[in-house]
Every structure is written in structure tokens, then in C-alpha cells.
Image (cartoon, rainbow, N blue to C red; front, top):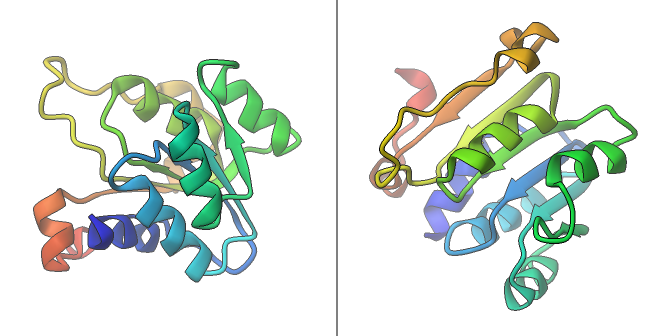
Length: 158
């Protein structure tokens, strides 16, 4: 899981001081949080509802925690970033809701790194077109399977 989280952070292509949201702090999310901190993220927002995982996220470098059971995570992240959104989002859960939320919180020109497992989701993932209309069409969205991440496969080179 550690390598998958690190690859997720690398694929977010963070620049020093940028803002990132990491959706889910289960098995992969904490490693992505560590990777973002090591890459020099200025603000790391972790989205998680389980108190023990929230503490783990803080321990590994998350600056702020957004609990999706207490508020709308998209609205809260946009509020925390003065309506600008994050420079990068990492989707580490594999739920259609977190996938769409990652798009909605990423600012125009931002990046989305997707490593969540969607194998049990029966419908194809939808890409919300509204964010693309606001400039996300110039952003990059990178996905790597867990096996590819563990093997160090660089999906962006394909």
C-alpha cells in the first residue's frame, strides 16, 4: 500500500507549496498523505470520517480534516480554499462519490491522481463535465492500478 500511495502523490505532480485533497485515509490514503508531505505540499486536506483514520492522517501530515459525514466535502474544501479549489486531488477510495468530488474540488489546470479500486462498481465512472467547462480540460488525470503502482509502472508514459 505504501508504494501505491507514493505513486498517487507522484502522479499529482505537486509543486512546492501547492494544495492537495486526499480522498480517503484507509489503506492507501495515509501513504498518499505521506508522499504529498515529502513532495512539499503546502496544504494537505484529508477527507475521512473515521476518527482513528483522521488521527492517522494528522500524524502522517494532513493539515486539515474534512469529515464527509458532517458536511459536504466539496463545499467545505472550496470554502477552505477561498473558492479556488485545490491544485491536485487524490482519489484513494474507489467510490463514484469520491471520484466526482475530486473533479469538483480541483481548480482549473489542476491534476487528479486516481488510485482507488472501482472493481465492485457496476456502472462506468462518470466524469463531471461542468469542471471541464471551467478549464479542467487542460489538466491531467492519471490512474494507476494497485499492481502497476506496486511495480513502479508509470501510467503517464503510456
